[in-house]
Length: 222
Image (cartoon, rainbow, N blue to C red; front, side, top):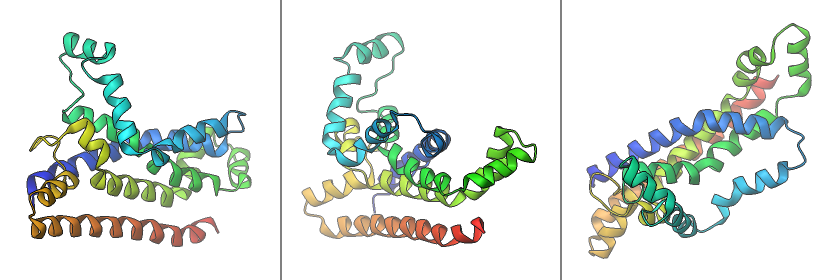
């Protein structure tokens, strides 16, 4: 087991989930309750990271934020921030790629809340903000758990974007998925097998949490 790569993967997964959770809640709630005409286009854009090859996303990330780009050059010269082959850039790319994994389960959870429940809260004198905190959020907790679990699991297993944006810098951008690739390239199949099993176990646990939360949802909605 490459424990250094495991530490980078775990840190990346935790930070990605923490950053995306509030953003995912806000976006998911808006998509669940909005009747805006452009909503289908917004949902289509949200789906792009699920449909496009990760290498395409990594390629455009390099074009937009590499040091050869205007924005990337400005960040490097003015702020001494380099987003290519750095953990900061890897984290930013991870947030962009994992947005649908966080948002979609939460959106489904908010959409499952009957309008009558929200209307009853308003009639009882609760403001929109208090209705969100005291009614909507407690009912939508299975979606929040599912979003966090899927985001963390996908972050740990992501390969294409990690390789293109972060490379394979030990202790900084080398994750477990990259370490597996390197071990296979070196014909060290036993080490690759151990790390691959760790990723399989992570994915199984994440999916199990999602299904376990879904089984609790009908009890919460009664």
